[in-house]
Length: 384
Image 1 (tube, helix red, strand yellow):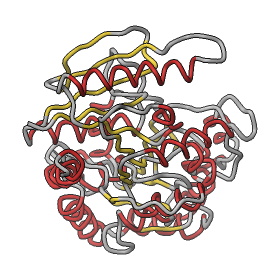
Image 2 (tube, rainbow, N blue to C red):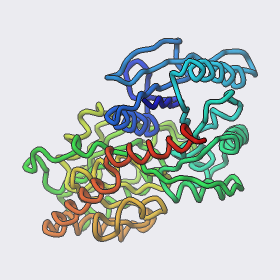
Image 3 (cartoon, rainbow, N blue to C red):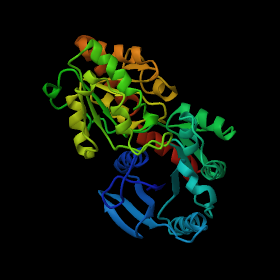
Image 4 (cartoon, rainbow, N blue to C red):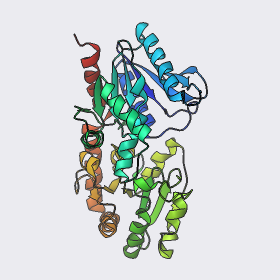
């Protein structure tokens, strides 16, 4: 049996705290690996205590960071290195996969255990796409981690190419996308769909195009006065302006007519997101910075009509005009007209929704992606 460990700052479980896209994609992959008889251990650092628990067959090991002024970053990495060495020596793990975010493996040098890094989008990557400066220390650790890894994965070709460019590297990346359990995301009741409802779900943050969305929706309302915009997600402070609330900034950008038709629901439990997708006619993702967003796959799997950003990674997920529409988030007129087109033309929408689900099943389904990962892991574990 193969034993894979994931080293991560986040994992979606009440005991481990808040989690974003990295945690969700690790959990999705872990479930798929378990189904293929692979043992999975998740090493979650930055926890309140050192503890372990079982999450439906996934072994979770919580790790508390070492606190010592000025040296915490180094001592925590050495603690993780010792844990990895012991697990590998005791044959409890065969390999560790870490995310690129802030380069946790920069000073982790296990004796024999192979280290893989998967690009989900580093801090340097997102800062670059967002046109803002990156902390030099984060970029330093991220580059060193990539240079030290035994092998490299990326969730999209765009993220791999951009990462090589940002760090001045010429590394080879194996491309394996984020997976989704397609069977969990399917329409149970087509009648629950609400007329002319547009849904955005994800963090309310500038990099996901949330300051463009009000300007887009203003134009939608001019052409489709009954359209409703539903927003779901955590309100995030804006780094660039220093404003404590992106939602507050958004409210000032809506026209008076548009504002009446906007409903911000805040964060909702992950289990309820599926219901909200089912109720929507169109899902919108005007993002400037992603690697390969699982939220898009969830909406596609549920045959929802999508108007999304046309940047890099998007073309690896959606075929424009066939499984959704891809538009520059800055082109408010075209973005709005694509939304209105889908709200009005139900026959076009029905075909596009079916194409989206077919595409997810073919390229992003957990069964296929888990098998692709296993073949990749074998090249490291069983190398002669």
